[in-house]
Image (tube, rainbow, N blue to C red; front, side):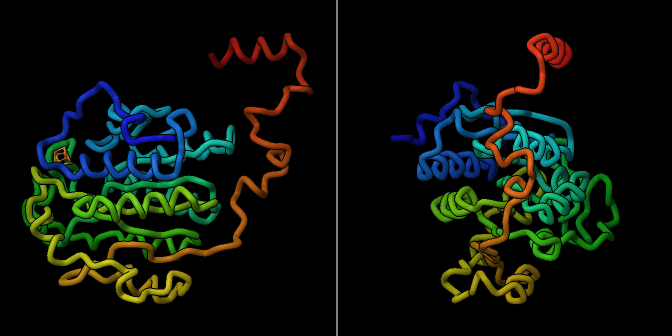
Length: 289
Ligand code: SF4
């Protein structure tokens, strides 16, 4: 039996005390254990940001890549071996700013990636600049007179781009967040998990005090996860009431990897290199390793 402790790493997180990333880390461990996924059966791909340090703090196969590109790297990993789970973990600057196009294309392809976005609505690692999901009017070093841009609506965008699983969690409710991530891990195609991640250092107005009285669970509100229009409308709900849970699930749509002819014989990583001679294989290995 897999337990949370199987994912413990000797590295200690360098996050600020009270950062929402601690809850996200714990929720991911809980979800993996509950889904009986062993550390060697998952690859975690991250970008750049406070939360993207996460593979250092959990015992899984980890790839700490470059800013905005973890979904692209994860797509390659999934095509190389769709027999294991692929999870991306990155912040809103990484996922909804520089990497926004990757989200859109992963969603329309329906590639089997669980895409966890730590949405703290600020750039934390670089000391508090406004981000793609910051509130208009937010004063930061790069918006001294208040941010002008309207925020990116990630859930509505994902639904519009054809995502087949769209959800949101909150580390202030760890059990619920672990459940949402677990549902995403069970989904065969692209699954977005937007996480309301309190940044207690650079976005105090949007920390636990803000979210605790506002979040409500969609499953308690009678939301129909198969109703795309209702999901899209809920995705814009923000203010006194903020929904968390599963917004939209589309069943029966084949994943990208199910449709790639070269993958019909099984994961590429497990297919024999029958068309190459041993010498050609050696030459290839020498080039890339
Ligand atoms: Fe967390 Fe914000 Fe500190 Fe980064 S700056 S570790 S996001 S609290």
